[in-house]
Amino acid sequence: MKTFKNYTPHPIALNDGRTFASEGLARVSATFTPFDENGVCEQQFGDITGLPEPTDGVLYIVSVLVLIAAKQAGRTDCVVPATGHPDCKRNDKGFILSVPGFVR
Image 1 (cartoon, rainbow, N blue to C red):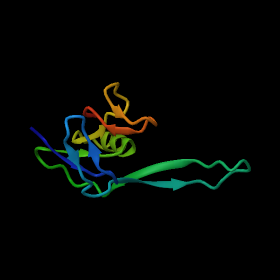
Image 2: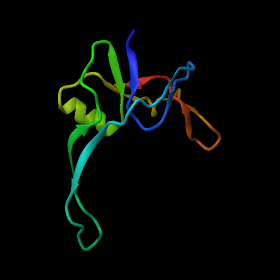
Image 3: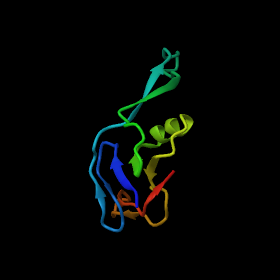
């Protein structure tokens, strides 16, 4: 069984009752072009910051942007909460309370 470490800014709750408190914050750096006459600019993503080096037996819970950047860098130790899964538990306003697991 793998150990999960949460590098998102908020706790992650699974449907089985497990929760993972934030242990840090992984982000992807970004640069922006100037805004055009319509108030639109382009964004380019760069390096990942705040994500520990791979550790045997550990999966890092991250945001989707970090997952994409990590995959492009060849990492296989990052996952995101399965927020699109039909077994997500939601409150009466549709906000996610817990997820059934993670996706790569």
